[in-house]
Length: 443
Image 1 (cartoon, rainbow, N blue to C red):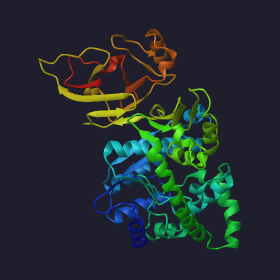
Image 2: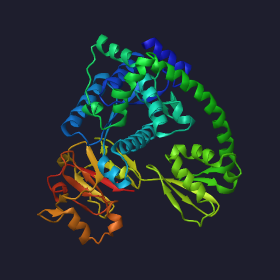
Image 3: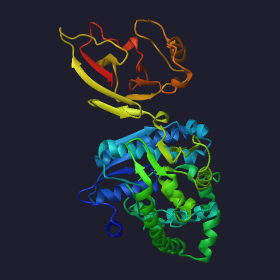
Image 4: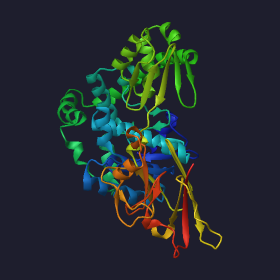
C-alpha cells in the first residue's frame, strides 16, 4: 500500500514528500491511525492535530490521550483543541456534525498558518468519497458534490483517497496497529451511518465494485467541473477584490454573467454559503443596502454596489494552550506576549489592566486561554475570598454584548490566574518568596 499511496501523492501533486510539512488530522480511529503510520513509513515530516469536541465525555478524553501518545511514538509535534461544539451548534441552529466540521477546519487552518505547515492531511479513503457522493446526491448538489471528495482542495490533501476500506483494515492487522473505536460511528442517528449500514450493502449487491465505479464517475464529473471552474475564475478576476479583512464582489458585474446564481454559488463556496442562501442573495440584488446573510463560518452583507464577505469569529468556542517557553499567542481579537523574568532587587511589578505579573512557580503548564463560563470563580488580587466571575463583570460594568469577548488565562490545573484585561488572581500574586515571574501582556 505504501507504493500505491506514494504514486497517488505524485500523480495528483498533493505535496512533496521530501520538502513539504503536513498537519495530520488524527481522531484515533482506524483510518487516521493508518494515515499517520503510512506517512511515517514514507518519511513525511508531519505534526499531529486532534479535536476534542466535548461530546463523548470519558471516551473523548481517552481518545485524546491515545492520540497524544501516538504523536509521542512518532516523535512529532502535537496540537489539541477542546471545542464547545454544542454551544456553537445551538447558536447557529445547525447539527452537531456541521458545527464540528466548521470548528475543526477553521482550527486546522489557523494552526497550519501559525505554525508554518504546508498542508493539512486528512484520512479520507475511497469509501468515504463514495458515501459523500451519494449523500450529496440525496440532498441535492451541483458538480462539486458529484465528484465526492477531491484529492486536493487548497491546503487540504487526502493521500488515502485511492485506497479501499478493506485494504486499510488489512494494513492495520498486518502492522499490528492499535486504534480507538468511536461508538457514534455505528449510531443510526447520523445519516452517513444509515447510508453505510442500510443503503450501500444493497447497491454493492448490484455492483460489487461500487466504490471504484463511483470514483471513476467522480473523475469524469471533475473534468466537467474544471471547465466551469475556469469560467468562474475569469469572473472572479473581474468581479472579486480581496483585502486583508474582507472579500468584495461587484454586483453589477455578477449580473452580467451567464447563470448568475450558479456562478455566485461557486464564488461563495469557499465561504460555506449553501445554494438556497445564494438564491436569496441574488434575489436581494435590487433591494436596499444592509441585507445580511450568514454561513457557519462567514457573514455576507449586501452593500450598495457590492457584496462584502467577512469571516466570523469561531475562536470563542475553543480553548488555546500556552506551552512552557512560548512567547506569543495570537487569536482573533487577542494578542498575548509572555516573558519569564528572574526576581532581582531591580524588579518592579508592572501595573495596569493590560498586564499581569504572575508567580511562575505557582503556575502549571500548559496554560489555557478560554472564554469565561457561568460558574467560573476566582480570587481577585487583594481579596482573600472567592468571587463569581459573573458578579465581577457586573461590578466592572461590562456591557452585556461585550461579556462574550472576555477571556481567562488558566493554570494547567484549571485555576483562573488572570481575567484578561481586568484582574489577576490572588493565588498567583508575586510575593516575597517569588523567584520567577511570568509577565503576560495584552498587546
